[in-house]
Image (cartoon, rainbow, N blue to C red):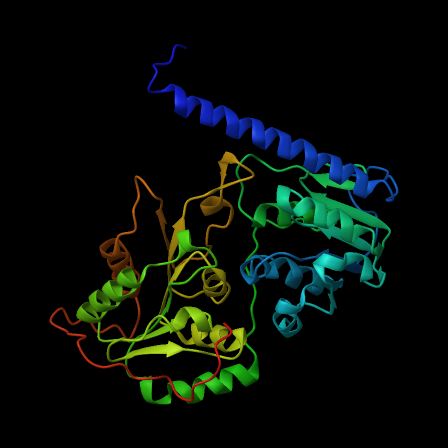
Amino acid sequence: MSLSLSELPGALKRLNRQRNRYLHEQKRRIRLVLSAMLLRSANKHEKIPQAPQRVVFPFVNLGIGDAVCHTGLWRKLKDLGYRVQIIAETRSEVFFKGLDCVDDVFIVDVNHIDRLEKIDSDIVISMYSWMQRKELLEIKLLSRINYSYAISIGGWLKRPYHITLDLADNFHITDPQKQLLAALGHPCNTLRYWLNPLSFSDAFIKNCLQKYAKKPLIVLSPFASVSERTMTRQQIFDLIAKLQHSVDCNIFITGEKHQLATLDHTSANVFICAFDSLWHTISLVNKADLVISVETAIVHVACALNKKLVSIFYSTNINYNDVLQSNTVFKPIGENVRQIIVNRTTLPFDTDKVLQASLATLAAADRLAVDPAGSGNCSSEPLEPATVADS
């Protein structure tokens, strides 16, 4: 195919990117092989021939949303009689220890994996070997576990694993979990996420919401860990104004402390939720009539609690694979979910589209009060009692 002079620079850039990705992948594979040299080679199995026992999941360098997406699996295993063990980092320790479907939590510093004391378990499961940037961590953690069997989900390196479960080109995050259950001898057709809010956070939120119980409660989560998935300040206030013009409601905005600090001028019936625990946010979401969230943990929390949800997903590919899209792999699940996909070019963020999806989702709520003539031009009111943000 011939190229014009104007097309040549773009073609050269694409070739350079492809070359860099190829070199990066070869270096990654070399590091994987070197790290796995001290691990024993595993005999291949189709299923694990064992009764229920201890099963450990390395779950590091991952977000809370990733963890929520696996709670249904852990709940299922616990109900089947397994002892569920998690290897996690300090930043997610409180969340994992609050899950009633997890028995043991082992804390590791990913920068010093060699300092992790040996963990005794029967089956180790590497759920994120399919993600290139996670596979090396999974291999390193294998060396710190005394196990009988090892299972990986996807991934290039197969030598240390007794079972390697292959994935389709595009899949939902629950699909490999169902494959895993089948490999353990427990076929399962459907999986739902599982969260049980804690009593201390429920009591706190119940006290906070006593005077706001007469209007629909909307939880807005506009902040993500990366800027591409985060709503701009203008989009936040534009959406709030449109919601308040259409619905007589209370809006509770969640996020981390430094993110919430950018919202200094909100309107009446809009509350900044600077909580000192993610579990407070989970309890708040559990009380919501509607959750509106960008692609972050709150999306999956809402799914676990079966809440009415409008999720805004920024379309990105995984492993440099145009087929493997995050908006499909981590697509929210449930009967009350609407997903809006945005990108930088053909699908820009549109507050009107989010508004219409929100109103349509709210329409089934028992306490809906629509007021097209409503106004939201008043001063802000804080959520009391105020606490430190860490949601």
